[in-house]
Image 1 (cartoon, rainbow, N blue to C red):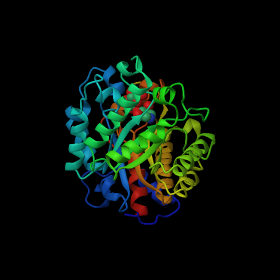
Image 2: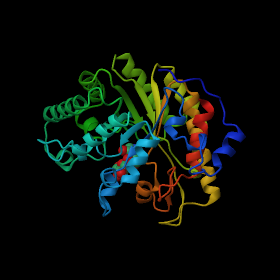
Image 3: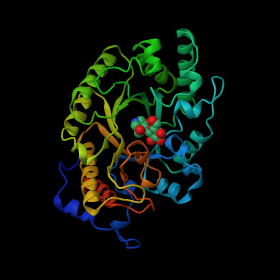
Length: 365
Ligand code: 9MR
């Protein structure tokens, strides 16, 4: 369903309203959740914490153990992306086995809460199991392993996963295909990209199949490389349906001003687009530092502008934050000295960015 047309810019009033603290318990629009504030046909999502960097910490799976965390996932969002649970390292303990237990729970939860699911990810250079990366397989065996994985995983969730990140981070920071780091591209050649899209499409013809990457928010060399790749794939009749832009942002790098123009040029090729992993990290002095008022206000502005760019672009129909709370964020372990990048704090309390998103959604509805 097409989303309603949006206002083209955030007004000063909208932003000022958004920055007002929430009034818990007060009746009226301040009580609306993000998902209730979104225009029809537009999805507001969050990744679901578990696995990955959290394995290094001594606490149980947030999704199954932190009830307050999981309740907010259901209330606030109408789209979920497993942060790690559908990656190879999680689904494939060995060559002969699959472990769908935690991924299944997320998909079942999403169905109960009337949420869409973005599947993440099928072809990536990271978070692959050791048996695969260090195995001694022939080209033919690897192809068979990949085909079986894609067919099994996409087939299992047929009709229940709305969009799949099929190709994840296939292009490097020099705007070239990762033909060394990515085991599949290295061993099977770049043609394997088309194969995986075709296999995924055969396993679930209704699922929308995406390329997903970071540092392609703007019109730049890397997003140009994606434009070329998409054109080639489409010319070959490959079922590629979307480009998702991760949007791991930080004020230190400046706001990506040409985001809307960039989304539009992929929309012009007939693709759907999405902002798939949004967060806005700031400099912090370490654990417990949630950022200054000024930092959080700038952060709120970045979130709202990115959301507005997506709302403005006809092709862009979902906006997913990569972890809605600082409590389980991947940022501090990856970027020492940075953090507080989410829209709710360590105590699951909304930050100014939460209000800014909600107000941007409401004013565009
Ligand atoms: O958030 C994920 C973290 O828990 C993992 O440890 C990490 C491993 O690389 O992957 C993180 O998610 C990444 C996503 O899958 C792809 N885009 C970048 C994300 C942040 O690194």
